[in-house]
Structure formats: structure tokens, C-alpha cells
Image (cartoon, rainbow, N blue to C red; front, side):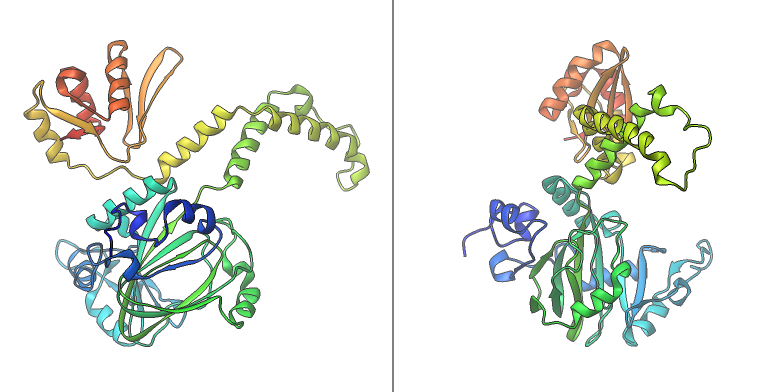
Length: 402
């Protein structure tokens, strides 16, 4: 087998990027087999890691939930205080988990993109490639058990089979491309009816296989013959509806400055009668359409950029390492932008500010040129930046050594 590229997305799909983008992204399910992907996912997660996370890492809710027979158990069923010096009551209890798991319950390790380094780095790389925020959960299911009933997610998912085997049953959506406030429980009857029909895909996932499901596709899975562990990467896609929200927000802000729209309805208006509102509705409709039509693209993009910054975190940075770099700082010290920082230089109102997922750094006039070069190149020496700016960027967690 020829070597496959090692980018995050290429590890998950057995087709080229153009084909995935044109034929599958947001449209169709795709099952990629380990033989075509060229490896397994145990570098991201394995069974010993699961044991370590739930027994030695002091996880608290909501970093773990437990489900059985399609129902999520209450937190007290699997949590307990941690003893002297760690008496917080919602810590995961490995003692309770042993009994629950042995009785057929599924463990769901949530937000692993925040707690396990290999997944932190992989998810960061995948989100950067996709241009959409990504989260990571792991599902650990005992033999011959099903953690959740047929349902759909409001985000796209990549299902990475880590260990054991699991039979998946996939059905077509009952509601295409659901938004985040349109969960499957709103259409429970339609979901149950569709799940009773023959599936689009019925397949057993083995270690190293990956299944891509656009949001809305119905799915359920059952572990076969042994403990099954899979990692689900949830992709919270930006949508055209999100653009519509930003356009209408901007339009309403503009209408707030229109005295005619702010004006009161006529004396004696009866809001229960549509005919008394018709003229005013038409006036507002025309003003609103014009405000949407003339909405500023840069303003919409800036709002999405702020939302995107808030949706993700930059690559991890060590406070001790940063201080160590500061202590040893010299003109030749190599620095580079922290990964996944989403940094921009904003210049408005006579102020220059470097904004990023790490926060804001106010800049002096002399700082602007070296910061522009840093953003263009991604790296610089402390001498290029100047000692004062280099120190502020290190303390602001914007740059790291290397």
C-alpha cells in the first residue's frame, strides 16, 4: 500500500480531499476502512488510557457521563468525593464504574480535546483544516450492549473505531441539516419510524475504521463480542443560517437608528387585527430588506471571526516554559506564533491591538511593523521584535519558543 498523507483529515477519509469536499461533506455518509486509511487510532486513545482517565486523573462531571439502555444515568450513580484534600463530591468514582460497566452501562468520556494531549493536538489540527470547531468524545461499551437509541446529531461526526467491534446502522435524515436548536427529540416519532426501515448502511466497524456522518443522519451502534471503544469527533459546522443571523443582527442595529422605524404605531391600533398593521408592516419590511441588502460584508465577517475565536482554544502553552524563555531571552531566541491562535492586527480609532484566542495585546506605533511581519511569517527572533515587545508577547501567550 502506498504511504498516505499524514494530515488530520487524510487520516479519516479514504478519498482525496476534493472528492470528500464535493461529494460527501454535509451530504453523504462515508465509511473508510482501516486497510485504506493505513493505520489505527491507538496513538490518540486506547483502553489503558481510558482506565487511566477514569481512575487516576481526577475527572469531574461533565467530563464523564454514563448511559444504559438509551438513558443517561444521574451523576451520583458514578461520582463520589475524592477523600482528604480532594473532597469535591462530583469526582468520577472508579469503584462505581466497575459495577456499572459490568452491568452493561456505556461510559462516555466528554471533551477529550481538553484533557488528553494526543487528542488535543489532533483535534486542533483537524479544526484548522476543516475551518469548523471540533470536539471529541469517547464511547466505551460492554459486549452486546447499545449505549443510545437511534438518534441524529446536530453536528457532523467522524467515528473512529479504536478497539473492539461495533455494528452501526445508518438511516437517512428525517430533517436535513438540523440546526443546533433542532435536536432529534423534537422529531422522536419520525426518528423511530425511520429507524424501523432498512438502513442505508449496516456495517461492523473494526479497529482503524472511520465513519463520517453529516448532521441529521440517524445512527445507532451495538458492541459485538467484547468491549468496544470508539472516538467521536463532532464538527460544529458554521452554516449559512449563521450568516443569516449576523445579517439580521446588523440590519436590526441599523434600523435602531431609523427614527421612522422607531416611531409609534397609530393611536388606537388593534394588534389583534392584521389589517390595522398592514401599512406599518410594509414600511418596516422595506426598511429591513434594504438594511439586509446593504449590510457590510466586512462587518459580517468580523462578527463570524469573533465567534470563531470564542469557539476554539489555541494550542496548549506552559506557564513555566514561558517564564523560562523570558529568563533566557536573547536577541537570537527563536519565537513563533502559538498554533491555532487566530491572531489579527486591528487598527481602528487611533489604536493598534493584536487580537487572538489568547486575548488582546495593545501595541505602540513602533510595534506595528514587527507584528505585521510576525503575522505574515509566523515566526521571528526576539531581536526582530525588540526586547520589550517580545516579552509582552511571551507574557500574553501569543508566541512560544522554537
